Length: 257
Image (cartoon, rainbow, N blue to C red; front, side):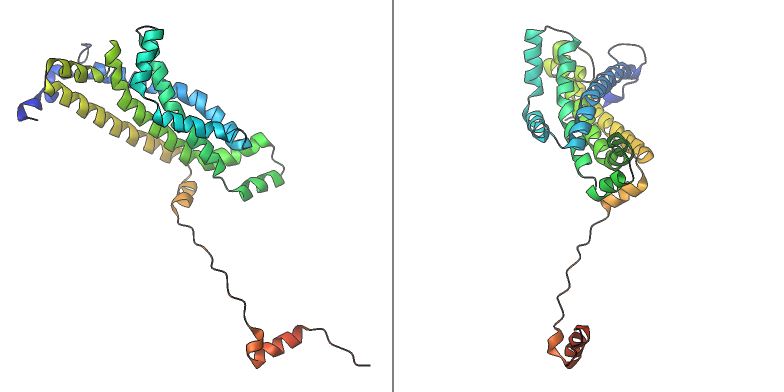
């Protein structure tokens, strides 16, 4: 990387509001793809994860989807959808939604299953119904893990949405693809830096939102290390006269005839 490659990122002409190829327009398009894909994935994954985590049924589905999501090549899926559906925004959005579903689904399921069962039993003992236990007990206690899944899915989508430029769409992948095809590495560097900065800023914003929504007591309880209580060894009462006297005191008195 040469020093001459960096100034293109700070060129005022690239930061003008209005032109479709300027950075503000590309960032807006990239954020539109990201938020749309994560919102659709959340609408699908959250209800399914809440139901499976609450009931404990079909948990193998969560494991299968999580493993498949980690090994699924997004670019290959986009290529397959382009061949079957055609060019446009639909193949790219479907691929991004499929990419965002596994982390949200698995974190939601894990969050509900991590809730203390004694707390759930106490809620049932107070007369709460299943839906009341879900909304008042399980969901509030599982919010940290649910937010972790949403943050993970958002970061993955931000990084992967750059492939939208391969199918003729905009976003921050456009300077990357254009720079590689024209051997203009200043564009490649600018696109990579903007994607990284955007991911960091969005993650910080989601972390701030999590602090506003999640109760501090729940977060502190997750961060606080648990202490194991070591069982006390049983005292040998017969090893000393005092122990023999204690045992004799506990025995019932024998009435002699």
